[in-house]
Length: 110
Image (cartoon, rainbow, N blue to C red; front, side, top):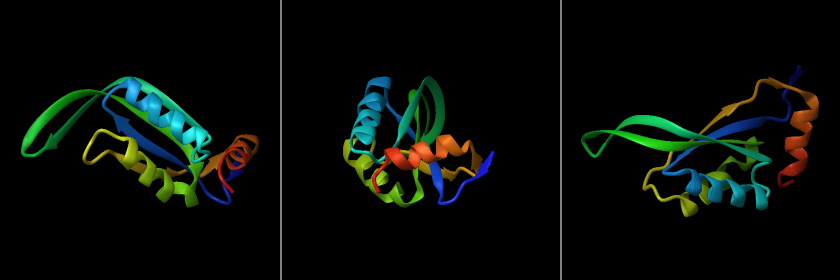
């Protein structure tokens, strides 16, 4: 296990469907904004929107990238996403395999 410096992050994004998640994920990888995007489908989300409780099936994207690319990923997701307010949240990777962390850095924009 290696301490993660410079920082890589995981960005979570929910999408309305696996197809939407796949299109967003492919674009982010092709543009080298993320090294990898895993998609978990279905997930069930319970949330309040416009004064109403909603229960929806969604797809969850788990994207790995460098911390300094977060804003670019966020902007790109906003352009590609069908939601007015998509979930785009990031958490730091505190530790990880050196080879994997190096791969993320290599596969994303410099």
